[in-house]
Length: 534
Image (cartoon, rainbow, N blue to C red; front, side):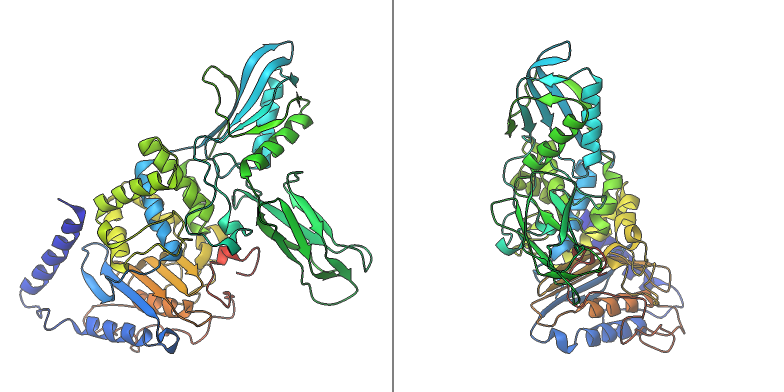
């Protein structure tokens, strides 16, 4: 049976069964349970917030075990989902690639190898790994040296042909291009730290020792691929106003503003232009440190010959582990790599169209009505993505039957948990409420777009699936509306005699964030403000 029909059949059975229970009050469509009436009233009031005047709001809540809808407001309306799109990508990746899937980066020799001399080219072949660090390239270089190679007479060839050469996603805006959440996508890339923002470099500006001097600017990892144009100044006193921006089409990062003597350094994550070349530069430097000389130039985008001899290999963490930084920190680069990897594995084409087609095929089989939605990328950065909240809930309900559900559930951000790789983008939200350490949900944020879709356990111990998607508001933030809805659901009960949501027995939603919560003032993913604003 089609899963969508299966879920709705379960819901019908549940309703019929409750009506047929001997001695129990009957609950019909004409006379819903009082608790459900109160829940509807509470959620309606929350959505009447003045910040949503003239905006669009879609909210759906369902029993995750039966699929029975408890609340729906504009559930079938197509809305821009932002990073809630990652729910589709993550589910499809776990199903189509498998939790044990790994990405392989390897090194090959093409040419005769005798007495430390390779008369030919050295190939660095990327397998799409978004977690490759400079340290991983260093280990590959050490293995090359360990194999006896000392001199390569030919070129260092960076093979990124597992995926197509399209670097930026469809519909991405030009003014995001410098910033790490819009990094270029390549099968061969570098991440600067264990957030694994592939295709970026960390730029750090520290005050100089004397006023009037430019700040000391360093890069992580150290690379000659990026050039710094330092126009900033160290001042005796005053606020730090240092900013970084990469010039379009280049790897020149311009540093402007001021930083005071003795002030804390300022850092940011900036994208590179052409990450394949970045990876090749980091690897070439590592080879040099290990005593391996490559006499030729660096060549990008040429495939490794089939008869080339492997000399070094690095395998990534399994997909089940990658899901944690991907979903907890809402890593856009991971979403796009997974989209292209799905396309490569399913159809032999590492492209966005192939990946999106395979994702659509899976979520349709899982119960989403793909005729009602549009997915343009893997991360949700495109504003042409459109998904009704009801379809998110159908997916959330359906995947509970998948063998990888526990991996999926653990990877979702957990409300109010301060641990970065547990709470993720929800770590500063809903603290001190019934939703804290309870709600597991994916956040989503663009200007004028906010979303929260996932699971919450109610006061009766039932797992509820919910989706909240808000569009076209002008307020700086509507996150507190999402939080109040989630807290209301956490306190929901249908037990006879228990307080209804919003009643005296429900934990009160705070008028402001608790003192230990420091969410950003605007609707942006917490992970989008690095390193400490969230």
